[in-house]
Image (cartoon, rainbow, N blue to C red; front, side, top):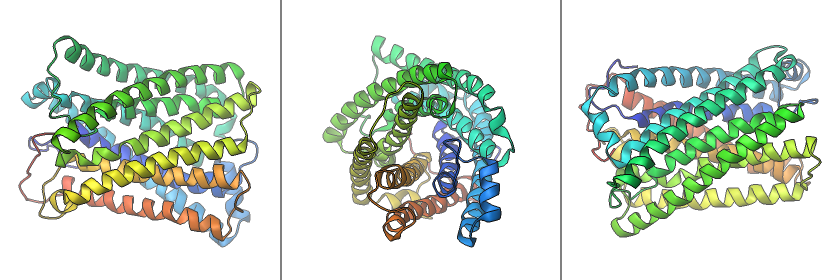
Length: 402
C-alpha cells in the first residue's frame, strides 16, 4: 500500500475495505447454508471440523474454499481499514479536507463508521470459523458487541448531525451537484450498524439481550430508511434535471447493499421474536419478504447498469487508459450484496418453504448466479486495488466532483 496518495486520497477509499469485508460474508455463506450446524443458528468451528472429517469430497472442498476466502479477504479488509485510517489522519490536515466539509461530499465521511461496523461483523465471522469453543463464551460477547455497535452508531449519527446542522441552518447544499445517489452513503452506514445490533437477537439465549438488540436495531433500521427516502427523492430530482454525474454513477446501485443488510437485520429480529417472544412468522412470509427485497435490488441494479452502459463507465474509469475514481469501489458492494441475498432467498426462502429441494438441480441453478457475482467481485477487487494502489507511474487524474 502506498504511504501517500499524492493528493488524490478520498474517504471513499474506505469502500475498498467494505468490499473486502463483504467478500468475507460471501464465503461465509458456504458454511452457513452448506454445513449442518445443529444447536445454533450459525456454523461454528466445531461444526466445520465435524463436517470436514465426515463429509464428502465436495463438502470438504467447499469448507476449504470458504475458510480460505474468509482468511484472505479478512486480512485484506483489515489491511485496507488501517491504511485508510492512517491516510484519513493525513487527509484531515489538508485544504482538500476543509473544502470537503463545506460541500455535498461531507457525507463521504460516513464511509468511516460504515467500515468500522463491517470490521466488527468480519471479526465475529472469523471468530466463529477459526476459534474453537467460542460458543461457550458467546453470551459474554453479546453485551460488548451491542456496546461497540452502539458507539459506532452514535459516531455515524454525530457525523450526520454535523452535516444536517450545516446545510439546514446555513444552507449551501448544491442540489444541481446532487445528481447521483451519493447521499445514500449515510443510510448504508446506519443500516450496517443496524444489522450488527440485530445479531444478538438471532443468536443470544438471553431474552433481555435479545430485547435490547431488537430495540436498538429497530432504531437504526428506521433511521436508515428515513435517510434513504430523503436521499432517493433528492437524488432522483437532481438526476432528472441534470443527468447522472458520470463519476458517481455506481451510487445508483447503493440501494442493493442497503436492502441486503436491512433484510438480514429484519430476519435476525424476526428470529429473536420467534424464539423468545412467541411471535411466529410463517415461512411463506419470509419467502415473500426476501422476494420483495430481491425485486427491489434487481430493479436498481438494472437501472445502475443501464446508466453505466450509456455513459461508457467501464472505458472511462475502469480501463487501463481511463481515469482513476475512488467512487469505482462503490461497484463492489452491490455485487457482493446481491450474491448474499440470492443465498438467503434460495435457502431461507425457497428451500425453507419447500418449493425446491436442497442441493438439487434447481437449487444449484439458482445458486450459480450468486457464485458468478462473487467471482466477478473478487476480480474487480484485485483489479481496482492494482489500479489504485499499485506502483504504476501513470499520472493520476482525480475527479473533481469527488
